[in-house]
Amino acid sequence: MRYAALVSYLGTPYSGWQRQVMGTGVQEKIEDALFALEGKHVNASAAGRTDAGVHARGQVVSFELGKEWRPDKLLLALNFHLPPDIAVLRAAKVLPAFDARRLALWREYRFFIWHGSALPPLLRGRVWWNRSTWDFDEVRKACTLYEGSHNFRAFCKTSECPDRPVRTIYKSYIRKKGNLCIFTVRGNAFLTNMVRIMAGNLHDVGRGRKNREQLKDLLKGENRAESGMTAPPEGLYLWKVSYGEGTPFGPYGVE
Image: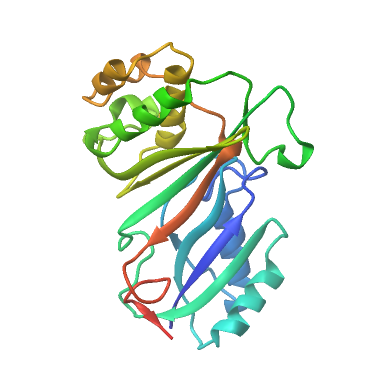
């Protein structure tokens, strides 16, 4: 039987989603919980990898189990075996063809950025505490430049950049309320560190160290060295993954 789960986690203690040789990935904890149910290793495939320290509100995972589970019972059983900083928010049966990674139409990330001389303690580890003052109007205009298909070579960790680093961004915008900014970006796929470097370049624009023409040049495939900083991971969230209309897992869900 094939199942999908909507997973949320605080990424602070983890080395990202993927199982690691050194360090602990969220995948390892999910697969350990599945092992407890199945009595053997179960591979979990996920849409959207996350870097070390990055959080998730709505990552989607798919896997196969040897026996049939009621979704509500499966959710309870998995959460019983998961640490408190990882939770399955929804579980469902899906069609045999469903694969969370291959069939995702888009992924959406949100970056929470706090501007101010003091950080509320409850937000520590949950936002990027950015003490700089930004020209928010310039940053807002710069966000729209990311939309469309571009060569994101300058926005990828150099050692992990693929031969074809072209990705399509469907939405890119920023909202501001008081000291809090939320940068939202939705695309078909993302490179290693891509959203964090996108945020780092917005940081340069906001401080007047880079203009929009320079940002346009970066999107033509310039080298990583010409690009901005890699923003810290703690403010970044894998927010949502879409599979189309219907259930949370698109037309592949079985209610």
